[in-house]
View 1: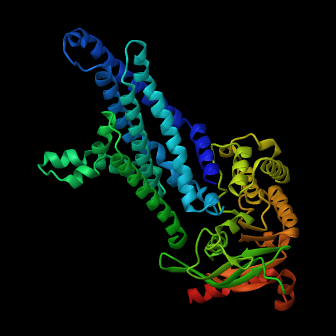
View 2 (view 1 turned 180 degrees about the vertical axis):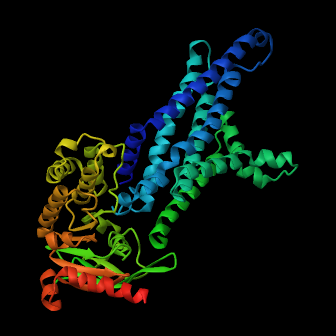
Length: 250
Length: 247
């Protein structure tokens, strides 16, 4: 049943212009960013050649691109996930799902799976750019792989947040705003606290970059995976509970 | 009656935002019966149907399907088809894609789902529209696609919220014929505020007013008992209260 809902969601996503437009715009921006970084690297390469243990293309081109993908996801995931439940509620189609006996958990997981699938495609397409460096140099595949792996978990956590935000309202725009605000808070929490002179291990743990950065540096730690899984699970649980409460509260 | 009725409402009440919308409604319905739920706007028809469809939980009382509770066995919902007030169509899907999804959502697979969709498209007169986008359908065809969605998986109980609203007389007549056919082997419950809908296709009528069930019986009984027709009875029930409220 989750598969049926996910497939329908996937089909609807690509039957509408929003997904295509976002995909095109995001890839165009990232390509521009990639070319700038590459140009910078080529300009520096003569100097780098003379240095011992100089940073390579992976450090100077791929790593900034991976960071850029993460920042773009902060904005794109809320935009794409905003309609997941709010849009269905607004158009009245949620009734089809609710009266089908599928249950709130399957509805939420189906939507989650479809959106995650979309972001896997987006991340894979974006990573084709640093992968193309293999034509001229030897990228650090291990680090690129770790970065991609981390971005997938990161995207899954953001998708969970977007779906949770979408479950609390009937206006997709409100859902997008709410999810974006949550993303930004989680993104900047630690930096903001440090700026104010507060250095707390807990706040540091809560922030998204704390757990994404290790991946980008090639460190795959289960602690960080657990963090992203926890965020996604918490968000999806809230969404399921919200849908269930709707039956009772109206 | 020896067997358990297909659908039973036992003292069902529902409060929404502090107001009682439906109060102590007891009803039962079996296959081969088309029940018209008649009432003025705001009488609690849609809320009652939403509870039957499992979208709202009753605040008190029970909705039993084949003697079992939806809340405990959600899979029962696959034997029910529901058309809400506005047809729940995905504007960006084609009619056939949409109906395939609805069939699969209710557990139909592969060939069975293809056959069911073809059958329901023919039955609801959607042949020419099957490759159109749902968002581009006219009101009449959208309503038919909504009904198709409710019956594609061959449910035992069909719940239709104002199926003939917004249709022209010709379309309304064809929908009524369809409902009559469906009611032969299944249980159908439909809500309406049009008396004509009830006399044209229902075998039983329940009148809901201010959330309370004021009448429940066969159409023929109504005329016999009250010595008048449906219209007079309906106006007596709906009108008397309003006069009381005004006084």
